[in-house]
Image (cartoon, rainbow, N blue to C red):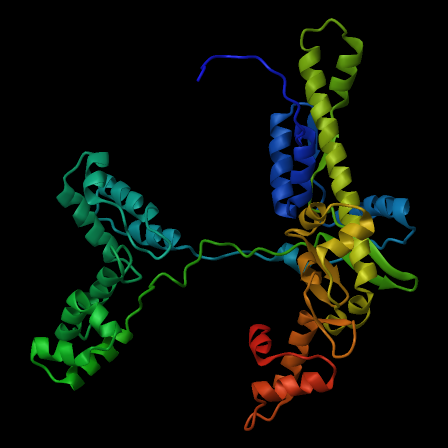
Length: 439
């Protein structure tokens, strides 16, 4: 066998995504919040981009004007707007005042006047390392080396942390959390303490006789200790939240009017991007400037970004318009009018790839006359009707099941077989196996 180098030509065919195409794909699949973050990053990285944020109450009017331009390219429609001076939005005046676990502990720490400044610094560090359950998984040896103190001093600060409210915070794990609560309880139960420390698994599996034999007590005493342990809180910090309330902003609005349905793509939350005219003029007038190529490259990037945003709006509008056309019964009657539909149905109608439809509807919300829905909710499977090629949406069937169960006799509720029979009488055959999967 001869081993060596040789030069030869090979012809291959492969798909290559340009950076511009990749950016357009990403912009299309971004949710509103992700798009805002992306645009802020682009404005920070590209010096020729100018970013401006719209006024909270005037945004919808501006958005409607912009969307009317989009609509006019596809089909004519009227656009409604809010009067920013007269409309009152209570959400804009809502104040978020939730206390976090960290702020609650730091407030107690500020009242401990007996502690030295360095000890408070260690405690602040420990508080910052608590996990979502309020447990401290930090290694004491590592913390001691970090602050150049003894392990004993770190453990003393951990004990101070565990003495704060809520009782159980700063524990190593669930067992340690329960033991701390038992030690601090006004009605100390020694048997309960021993069970939690050594036999928590046996307690969970209700091996009362085994525990009673180990400690020479009755099963009733073990049961009483078990009841006492159940009064403890395994998640003492569960009522604290680090998360703010997030409100869903619809990406598209669909309203019913005399002529049909008005579709408005909402861009009221996204910042407005533009290219600084100074840089445009600078490139045009200064032909020998060494920075010309640098500025020109950023201008091209900015133009591609603006084009991608416009394409996103157009695609989102077209997809929504196609969904409204296919699901007209839903927009007229509500959830009971929803019919089976797939991504392929919309892609064939718009002559777009299914992946494009998938990206356009991913993480997007639509405000309809019947409430707020995910765009993905309109793509549902269907079940064939008896002696008919027609199908019925599984979402519609679920809604009918809810109505039947809500109206049934609570003393003698419908059996699975009875519900299947009701649907079969209406023309939809559902096996008991499929019926159990639907809800």
